[in-house]
Image (cartoon, rainbow, N blue to C red; front, top):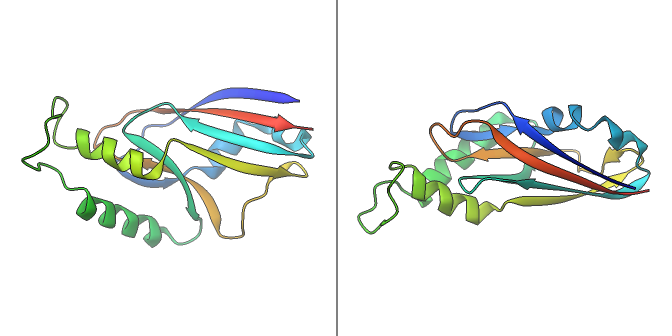
Length: 139
């Protein structure tokens, strides 16, 4: 069995946002899969997806602080600056984290670890709605 759906998330401010529940609300068919895989692919070059801590929001705050120090805005050697100071750093951060996740499905649920959640990593100050293609395969 295959299922594919595009899910457009509400716009969020710059930062790291736990979106597991929002995504799962849009995929009620997940409960029909006994075993399989779910691929999530974000259709943007200045935002990313990652799996990490689902309980303590300070982890997401610390990620934001680290990425902002590691990939600074307004570096004099940046050439791509057409859309503002946060644009090229957003592309770099997105490439570091990645555009897709593969998560196993077991007995109608995602086989995530106890403390794992799906994060939207918004790297733009005003990124807007972000769309994710969810593809489920299994039986």
